[in-house]
Length: 85
Picture 1 (cartoon, rainbow, N blue to C red):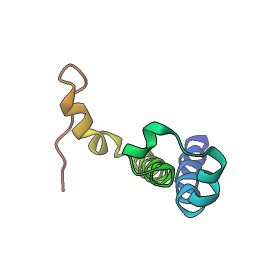
Picture 2: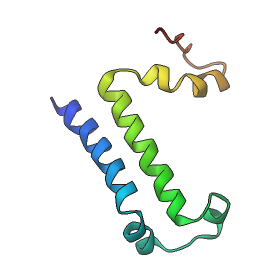
Picture 3: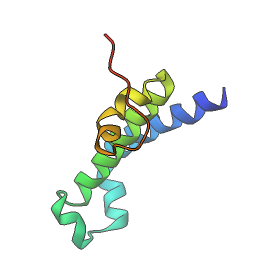
Picture 4: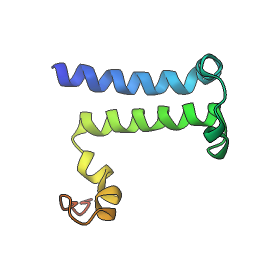
């Protein structure tokens, strides 16, 4: 039950980051390294999307499939499962 609540908070938090990106981005201001990502607004959207999908993947138990491209970059980590459809 606690795991579901944490994952639901990740999904809701990601959605709220995307919805209120202007207010959140104005609180933090502009950093030099964020210019390459598209600015602070795009950085907040990227973090929101990552939070949303990671919470959704943890809730449904598909984290290994979602992280398979990352696992394939590092050869000595856990073997990524083949997606089954």
